[in-house]
Length: 252
Ligand code: PEP
Image (cartoon, rainbow, N blue to C red; front, side, top):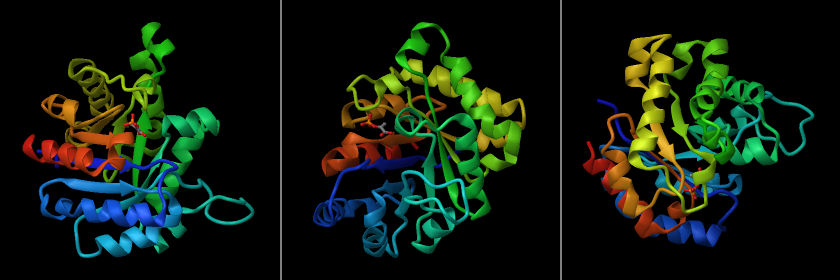
């Protein structure tokens, strides 16, 4: 049985005041003890949020991380810095990073490795564009993105990681992959890992992201290979995010 996992990616949104309000509204999350819930705020709010969630099972993740350890990389934040601030891990390969910051599979794999070396948990995001889906390339694209890590770091690298399937056409668009569409991709991703190591594949949490909201979460979580959600926009609304987390807990 895989423990459900839900994370709220605030993207480049928020302020100290908004973080404080949202944390107050999300206090019920402390009682959802059977799922892992992570908040993924912008870096300036890590310490504030970590302080507020101390003593609970809530975790803070970063939205990205540098592939380098230290040095002349202006603007970047290393895995060691994340760890120093009490951050548990980071997203790598989010489609917005791939699209707007030209992060390719090689860079994403290097970031994944940097996190592991610091003892942090990577959340590897994979997903196809609409053009790739329409060209029938979904499985080859997501497999390639996953294999960039698997082939260079081995299946054991996935031990503390989460894999997030996020179709690019569903992120922030209001369009969601249907539970059946998402399940098909999740099962294929698990099969890619199983070809390397069946136990690792069975234990790996594969979560869905792309316009998840309270109204569609339950249907997605009912699928056998969907182990939770990476939530963007809806994570900024406490009632929506709470309902998604409750749906994950009920799907146990
Ligand atoms: C995301 O940012 O990873 C995401 C899935 O966003 P949204 O839920 O807004 O589509």
